[in-house]
Amino acid sequence: MDKVVLAFSGGLDTTVCVRLLEENYNLEVVTVCVDVGQPKEEVKKAEEAAKQLNVKKHYTIDGKDEFANDYISKGIKANAVYEGYPLSTAIARPLIAMKTIEIAEKEEASAIAHGCTGKGNDQFRFEAVIRSMSDFDIIAPIRELNLTRTEEIDYAKKHKIPLSPDKMYSIDENIWGRSIEGSILEDPANEPPEEIYQWTASPRNANENPEKVVVEFEEGIPVAINGKLMPLLDLITVANEIAGKNGVGRIDTIENRMIGLKSREIYEVPGAILLIKAHQALEELVLTKDELLFAEFMSTKYADLVYSALWHEPLREDMDQAIDYMQRRVCGKVVMKLFKGSIIPLSRKSNYSLHDIEQISFEDKENDQKEVEGMIKYHGLQANIYQKLNR
Image (cartoon, rainbow, N blue to C red; front, side, top):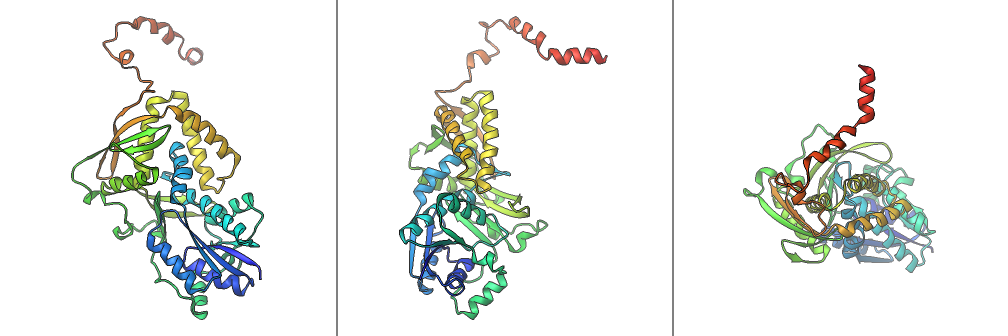
């Protein structure tokens, strides 16, 4: 019997997929759960579900450090913000797909499967990587059989498949952020209930006093927070805690999905907001005007590629090269002030600063102010001629 490796979370979709792959496709199922910082109970739930389903073999892969160092770090350097929010779910999918490919190769499987529906973005994100980085066939049982959520639940009951208690909301979580959707959130007219938030305090209940946070960068990557050097994974955890208790990182947006649908999404990204805002503040100090304009363009394009399941697009790799070159000078310290949901830079310092205090000072006597007169005379010359003709 041929094997199929299933990217497995232990939720309704992937749990039902196990039986569907066995009965409808006549395949032996191997399951893979990649830990990118989701709650420990979720990882354990996947292990227990695989055991109860009696799959051929289950793998749990710790991908947290790799996720931080090889994916999130790139997102920070590129300021990867899509339609107003730092990408968390989208930037994790390529790693999960790659790890699934590795297991499929190890198990000599004939295919890779996922539990994505035909309405979301993840089907693109998994399949784009699998197709570009392997020759495995792809099976998407939920999409191929056009199953609704109700039909999945009925199928599970009929086949006595153990299910976790049904959740009101669909939540995806990793160390870089939480996304919450579904139920009453689907209607943009409904106010999000406080119960959906776990990482962030409401601004009303956040700390009563402002908090200053010092973030230190080396070549665009945060390496220390409040004077303590630590691995990026640990630093992100600390950033999440600090920003979250100050009410920073809640985003409520109407997102444009890849298939054209608009969807209401709620994100909690406290650490990501803190680190990206600090990174941008330092870039303002050390990059030239033209570099900043180009960096802004690249940021938008970079985020769009990641969101749109094009992590393996050569342009993304090309931009990494350009970004890394520019980030050589993004070294220094930034002090951010966090207070009841707001976040602003207070100070920034770098050995690569392009800010010249002596020349910008109103007390500067070395540079003769009259010398700028000639520059002003020819500034906007063509526009001046045009306006004279109009008069």
